[in-house]
Amino acid sequence: MKKLFFIITAFMATTAVNAVDDNTVEIIFNGSSVSVNVANNISSYITYQNNGAHVKLIQSSGVNDNVGEITYNLSGTSTDGEFYLLGSYKTTIELAGLSLTNPSGPVLNIQNGKRVAISAKKGTTNTLTDGSNYSDDLNGCLHCKGHTEFQGKGTLNIVGNYKHAIYSKEYVEIKNLTLNITKAKKDGIHCKEYFLMKSGTVNINGVGDDGIQVELKEDKPTAATTDHEDEDTGNFYMEDGVLTINNFGNNAIKADGSVTISGGTQNYDKNAVIEYALGINNIVVDDLRGAIYDLNGRQMPDDKSLSRGIYMIRKGSQVKKTIIR
Image 1 (tube, rainbow, N blue to C red):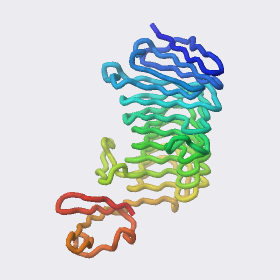
Image 2: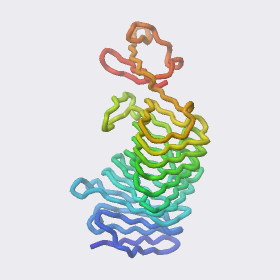
Image 3: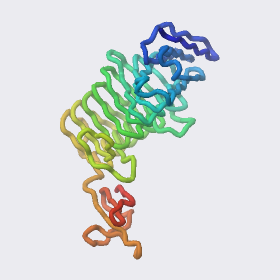
Image 4: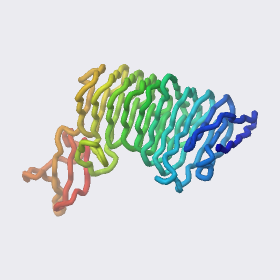
């Protein structure tokens, strides 16, 4: 049994009439309005509000392994809309034929620090476009706080007019889908921890800064791991698929860590790849003299003139600071 909710906007009332599966929330954009249909078995865990076609959904902290993962199915069209999700349990955002523009902020604003799967449904084309000015200090047309995993066998097109096309505060993984970034004022994809392309097709064109930039999330990087569990290296990995990057302002790929290509097809200027982790340099601090020395006892220059690399500043056996140059 399903439970149907209605949203009445200042312009018109919309009623979702299609039943949805358990653990599913269906969001349909239609011009200046949006309808939300929540499966009955999770209705006590989802609240929402809207202003026109800008909809904010709050997923209760009570969602856990017993409730299970919730899927948000997005479809329809609006030239002035937004999907905002607040939650604290892993979730899936399914794009099922969505064309959405937000003139005043990100199109998908996902404030969830857990694993977030962005799935483009097979046979669908989905287009996200943000505005050139934001009312909030956010970083991308698709802005995600958590671990962002792109998947599905559909197509996702993104235009980033304000800053990055895709911004993830944690890692980004890509599998199967076709991702087209046709414009970004800054980076096409900007993420932290690591970037992993397993398969699929990614086309990045017309970005003001870097095609893909990978940053460390914390001051102290971790070691690389086979399954990437809890990894924070700033590394870029490509295992398969096709990656094309054209018309970028600075670099095709920029990584705080290293760039590892083990398969797939790369169509970009290989000379436009920056790896900051050419080596990890361990250095120590002489508190009395205020000087920095490497482990061989040689005095190092000040931070601003350090050569490219990762420098681990240690005091005794503890890492006190990490400098990335």
